[in-house]
Image (cartoon, rainbow, N blue to C red):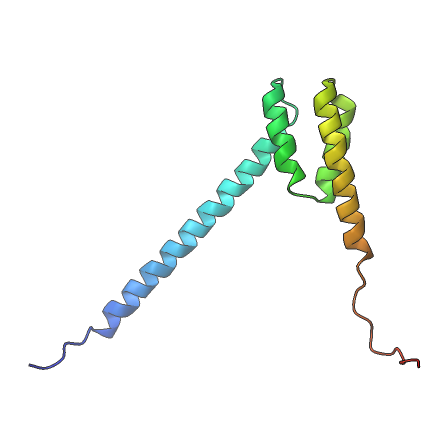
Length: 116
């Protein structure tokens, strides 16, 4: 008995369907992450303190300039002392992280001379 071979068109169709599935799942993942970010930002100003605390925790894990401005707005709005302290601590860490990333040297242009 001889070896059986799979027709090339069948292999290509299977690979195409697999690739389409990967693209669809990736797109869905991006949409879910975007929705999650928007929900946490909206919950930062929720009337429920526990939601505000959860939003603070989430935002604290994603340091960027926009989130730093958002935390400053939150600090001026929040009346709960525990949440204000938590937001101030997160903002302080975020500002340190952002300033440290700014100060990292970017590669030189190659015109520097070595000095001895």
